[in-house]
Structure formats: C-alpha cells, structure tokens
Image (cartoon, rainbow, N blue to C red; front, side, top):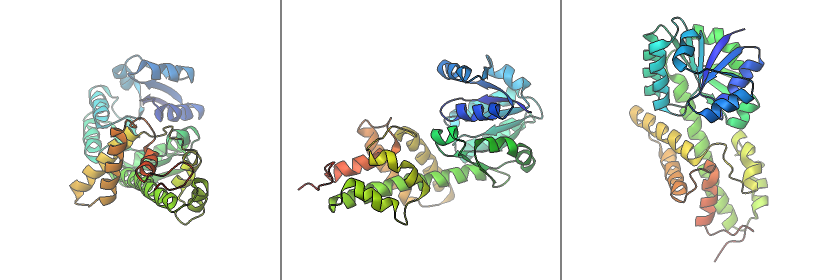
Length: 296
C-alpha cells in the first residue's frame, strides 16, 4: 500500500484523505489551519508539522486547495522540496492557467503533476460518490486509478494537459446555471398559483429533473439553505468560468446571469449560505408568499 501526503483537509480534503487511509494506505496530512489538523487527528490521520519536510519524504502527494493562490503556493513548495520522481495529484477547482503553471513548477523538481478535480460536494465526498476528472501524464493516471477510485465510481481520463480543469469548470457552469433557472422557474410557477410543495412535485417528475435537482430538492422544498457550497465559493468558480471562457472566445450569457444573481445574494448578506439561495431571492423579488399565493 502507498505512503502518501495529503495537503489541505477541509470539507472535501478530509473525507478524501480518510477514504485513502480506510483503503489501507499510510496517510499523513498537512494543513495550515490548526482546527483542520485537529479534525484530521480525530479521524485518525497523522499530521505533519512541516510541509517542506513532508514533501521531501512523500512519493505521492495529494492536495485539495481553495484557490489559485493556494495551488501556486503548494507548487512553489513542491518545486523547492518535493521528492524527485514523486507524483502530485491536485483535486482543486482552479484556473487552467494556474494549473499549467503549477505543473511547470513541479516539473522543475522532477515531480509529475496529475490534475484531478472532483465533481460533487462534501456530502458526496463522505459517501464516496465523487466523479474524478483527470488530465496530465497518462502513466500516472493508470498507476493511481485504484487510489482515485477510493473517492467514487467514476474516474475519467481526459488528456495530457489541463483538460480536466476545463471539464470541472464546464460542469460547474451547468450546476450554477441550473440553480439560476430553477430560481426563475419556481418564481414563475408560484406566481401562477401553484403551491410550493406541488410545484416541486412538478419539477421532480419533469424531464428537467437532473441528478443535481433531485439531490437538492429535499432541502430546497423545506427552504433550507444550509451550505454544501456557499455563495462565495460559487462566485469564485463563476469568475473562473467567465475568465476561461473569455480567454477562449466563448460567450457565457448563462454564467453572466448567474454571476449577477450571486452578487445580489452576497449584497443581501447571504454570502455564507448555499448558492441555491438565489431561489429564495427570486421568490422575494417576485413577491411570493410562503404559502404559494401571489401578491397583488
């Protein structure tokens, strides 16, 4: 079984590291946040005191990081102290540009960079229901696929470069677009006189009832916006989507509308709630009563 280092044990990284350990691998973790290290220790994971020292020893490095800046900081550490011949598997949602730069930095140390962003939220991470999009060295993917399978049933290899980053952004565009469309559709249905619970029955039995709609329906029916992914986090991803699309000359009117909806939610102080709170905002703007009776 493999000895590995996992950098970043937040809501996604902690269960992912735990699943690797449960599969019999020797896992050491590193995180700059003391609370996250404590949570990792409670889960039975060993915690490294120094990232530099841990990188020097690790033949396999995994990471789950919040943004481009964090990715590049780890890349700098890998370039300075990584073990020659190691493989670095990053699972973060980041820009293709930062991803490519991180791979270049790792390469200066002789470390192979496998880009493996995952599709799914923290609940799905706990349940081993994540989908892995992979790109980078094919040999590294083939060797590590059994480890990637610890996180869920599907691992898709997409190419030798940063294709996996584009795949993750494309999927997240579908997700944020779905919540934006739901907000408009539900407001329309309620203003038309359909009771909230009945309206959800309509949605869930329709051709538009995608897996993400069905997964979020129980909470949304109850007006529960406890975050699995916050407005702030989705704003970051939408910014990545729009930037990548602009660089490629791709129009993103759906992402533009979603960005505006998320901005309104953030301005209303809802930045820490689930990104689907745009549904509540649309109902408020449409002046819909909770009982489903239109105003005015």
